[in-house]
Image (cartoon, rainbow over the protein chains, first blue to last red):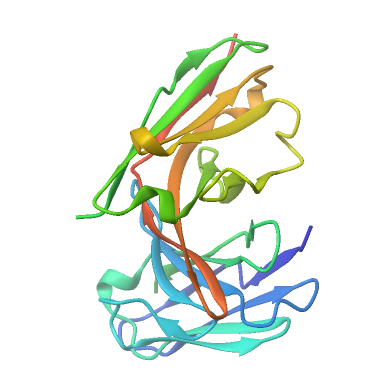
Length: 106
Length: 121
């Protein structure tokens, strides 16, 4: 199975900060990388698919980049509603998720 | 409105069995692969199993292979997960997810609210 490594595991940031989350895979997955946001007690929500395509309805402050084994999710200006846990997922082969990055208020 | 709704969770003793169901609406069910994803309390997401639109392609996580069986009934817009030989570590919220395809992507664009499975003596 493809291993996923997300870092940092958690971070503290302030409203308005630019935040960059990283996901690394154990082998080349081209662009088969998705990002989800999850808030406590809620189902995950799709943000980005195909490494960089913004899901309909997701604010443009979210962006994704990368290909191969290294990927990033960037939040250009953190908003109060963005404090949540973010998971990456590969869909190149048998699906796997990263361990998540928890974005907390500083 | 696209919707998937899980049911069938509950409390069961180790070694027991349970069958989860997921009913879909608002989209053409037999056009899409469907998956089960679980989340243990306070933990991350774990892919459990997936099934193609025609049941021709099925996969399982190593942690459940041989114990869980995924199936679907397109006539009933329903997805199932039969779970046997349940273990403490199977305790989790089980989500049903619709998988959509794209040129460089396959992604979960609809999730249910989950059904809780608790394995405990």
